[in-house]
Length: 598
Image (cartoon, rainbow, N blue to C red; front, side, top):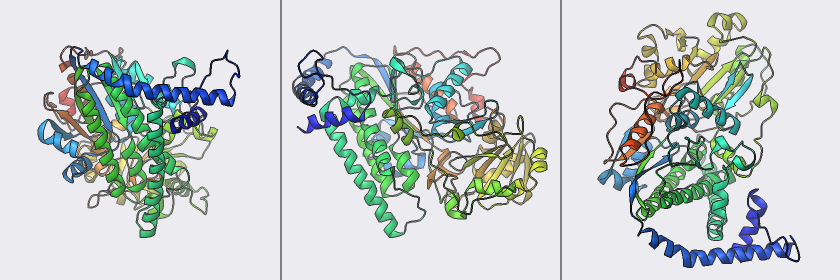
């Protein structure tokens, strides 16, 4: 009865989930006929689970083993230090055991844009070129690009493919699960870049339908969803009662969005990965977003995120157990796309948003009451894509009106300022002529670390560094860690870099930054753990030949591991770039060289 009711609820909630009675039978599509159809379905799946599935699993054990396959599991937002702490504290016993016996782990360094859109595009498609942030304004089209908007994700994937001349990491017998981009895989589920398609070509919700049509899955996940909503409400109330600081709003729809990310998407992605392994697919890349979503609102360290890490470890253990029964040997690689840096929001610390500060510096009126900058986490867009709902965006959010007012956007602790009325990239002279107080207002604000504009870096106290002058940027940006100047120099070369890029202040003693969005665990710019994700691989695979700098270098390494899989997918590595283009992979020398403009 519970399974039957669950199927009826799913048929009402999911657009691609239908209960279709026999159209020729008496009664047609009446409520009674639909209910009987749901009951028959529940019974049929119950019998299949009880009788057929055990026989099928045992039959798979008789299939001759294929060549080794590779499974890439992305723990979204889990930084290198966060993983080490969790493994050492006993929160992730599976990870800890693997590190002792079968796996190794290292940190790698992101680009300046330390967020999923840039990192996953680089990992799967070999190019992070011209992705300056999570969202940015493009003057040539007059539109705002947002990495977790389906149409933007599709456009970014097309640009990367055109630049590298290759469809991606997963082009041969590959599967992409829960990602922003496809990686060139034929088997797709919960992939944002294809969710904007219309008709039969849209496979983005296929994973939900395949998962929830089994009533046992539906009941288990539905109960876990309700429990997670209650857990979030309880944790939020306790944090408020304790007076925890920093803190952001966790009301409204957020408890349901968190439950979707930590329960529904996790269960669907894990089930899809299990299906891929039992089908013997050669390369699978899957993203588990739970930690990233919770850390944005609860902070990257604490009981809330500890519970998420423990559940991720249990999912990993389940996948590893199933891998033992797969028709081929699987080597499991775990990695992340960025870390998370803690800190009070810019608004919470200083009482105004970055947009308010820019308007004040431009002599424009500032609202008496500071508005909140919405969070750019991926889970909300994933919910809407799953339910086939249009993205909630006004015309101004997609295509702001051209005029004298600046467009101010936020990507974690990275801010972007563009002047639509100035053709091309604005120079310092032009900005100071039009808005004499703006640059000083920004550079001298205690919540701002540094500014970038047209080859110049501005810091507090009138400090200036030319990117073209050897050593100047390295000295000014030294507090932000090794490679900061290289990352800034590379971003400065992007065609769609903003007129002014603003990185928040960074406090090395605490590792804290100030997000320009409503996030107390953030990423997107320079400063702290956000720029240091991890890569964990089986020792049977070869070691990285140099320090891993940028997602493109991770892509090159994963390609090499695919080649090393005996009789596995033959992924081309020669230069396929169009004439005049740039390869999506990096030679070892340019990875290690501190002055290379990658």
